Amino acid sequence: MNLNDYQQLALRTAGNHGDFERTLIYTALGLNGEAGEVAELIKKAFFHGHDLDMDKLKKELGDVLWYVAVMANALGLPLDEVAQHNIDKLARRYPEGFSEERSRNREA
Image (cartoon, rainbow, N blue to C red; front, side, top):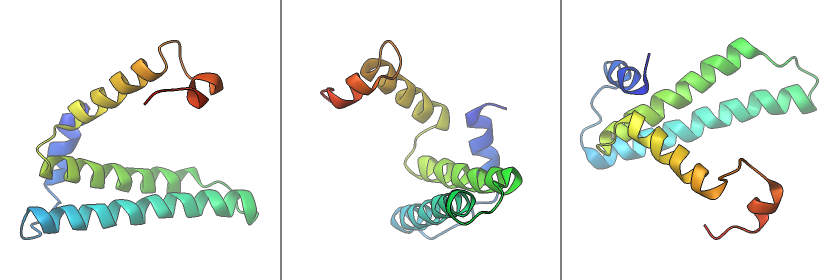
């Protein structure tokens, strides 16, 4: 599955939040909540002695992706375009791959 196909399928369950502004608020809050659930699973695994539950992480990461897809759609952005833009930015920032030196001494 490619990202644009995923985005279109995700929109089938997005519902209608009334308008552009409400959709952005809904997706921003949802994205933050789901990212928090990912962080909570990691915290419990590394600080509370829980097992790192890959099935739960996969579910929560999927929820993060769903909110990103729906928000991108509200902004008129195909998910493939968002992903490519990010990869292009990282390639400019780290043309030889990530390095701590380039991270500390980069322009943007």
